[in-house]
Length: 200
Ligand code: ZN
Image 1 (cartoon, rainbow, N blue to C red):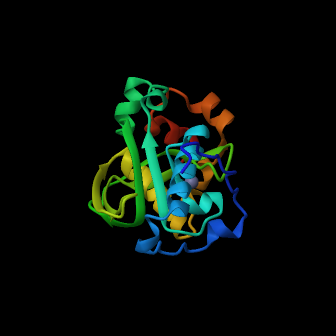
Image 2 (image 1 turned 60 degrees about the horizontal axis):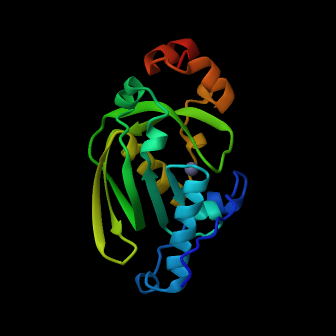
């Protein structure tokens, strides 16, 4: 199999594939060249975007499969204070087939997030601070992640995609903004300050 990975176009909101429940990946499919190529394409597409996660429906494939990665060069775009407030730390590539999430704490945290399928916009979304995700890896082996803070947010966002849910269904609607507006108005401010500005 070629090591060159292709980049897939990212489906934008409005496409029915983003609003449907994705199907479980049959375990016997995981080792097939077709699925391995799909995983490679998803990782390459996520990196190229660049993004911190991608779900298969976002490239038009209605399967329960997500990839996640938070690279140091992306995290470094935030100030040390912002990294700490978001509990955002780099982590290496994760591939999760048929992920199942369990919420570990009632505590919720609110930050801006965006989506490669709602290009150009961001909004504040409440997410559980701590979750556990189990599923299979790219070799079909069981795996489990305990995620706190930003990685927990990414898992919740990506697993939502598998159930036809977008962050715009959960956002604080008054915070919805273009990336440019959000950058111009809110950069360097704490979430408490931003909430006060927006009245949310
Ligand atoms: Zn998304």
